[in-house]
Image (cartoon, rainbow, N blue to C red):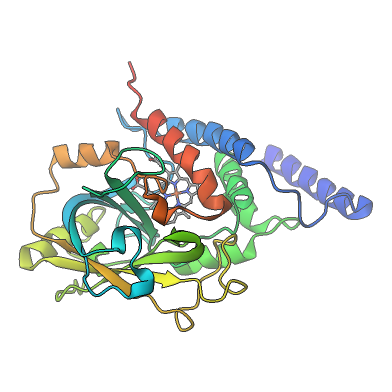
Length: 342
Ligand code: HEM
């Protein structure tokens, strides 16, 4: 208690000093990508090591595995000419491995942001990083990220490490009220991940860096889960199972082009690109058939699998500093959590 009061006093004094000396400009200089990666990696390792459960070091983000599933990703033959780039250049079918997850809650019945990560195999062309023949897409269940920049993300990681998340949002001298609002709107109770829309939130190139796009997976199944199936901590896993036993699941995979750079920025991940100004256009369909996925083997494989936005064809290069930082942060995080431990 006394410790907390002392911390609050220190930050108050720092804030007053800033104001009096005008030494703390509202726009601090940008950190280098290397600095951000090093600082984030050290903190993420400390946080996840402390959260280790049995043999498993959880992911820093999206730690609760709902399910890993196999699917098929079919690129349409009628993709509009200006979007026929990279993977979407010609009609083709790719095996897909999907991971559905919760951003922070282990209990599926609680409000949360959900994640959908997709790994395609059999892809032709050189990749920017990682394994040849593979293309990853990493999506969240809200169209904006809760922070604008990697510097803000680092601020949040620091607060989480110090167990002071609320202070990140409400610090009177550096409040993140928009972030708090986004978290409030993005965290939802859900009946099934198969009925939810997911977004990349950050942009990627399409063909060349002159054309930026965001991605979305939009549910298109004929079946909807109306209420929680087996309410409780694994209810979303149960909902997937019940759905697939009734009929296959389907998502449209769609791209949204950057039509107006000032209102659709690359460097602010908290801005939603207006769908009226630039609607998502379907370029592929993802289909999931009934399968056995809630086995201990499948769940253990799901803990080990990893995704990286840079596991990608050059035609879909990740754009912006937020994505720049993610290349090494995800690679380091994966190595750390999958490291052999005595
Ligand atoms: C600087 C920005 C970001 C940082 C530092 C960061 C950090 C991380 C880390 C460390 C992991 C765990 C990786 C692993 O252990 O394999 C992760 C996973 C994840 N992140 Fe991020 N993230 C950032 C931005 C984003 C954005 C913009 C999205 C938007 C979709 C996102 C969505 C996800 C998802 C869905 C996962 C789970 C991946 C999986 O299933 O393995 N993150 N993030």
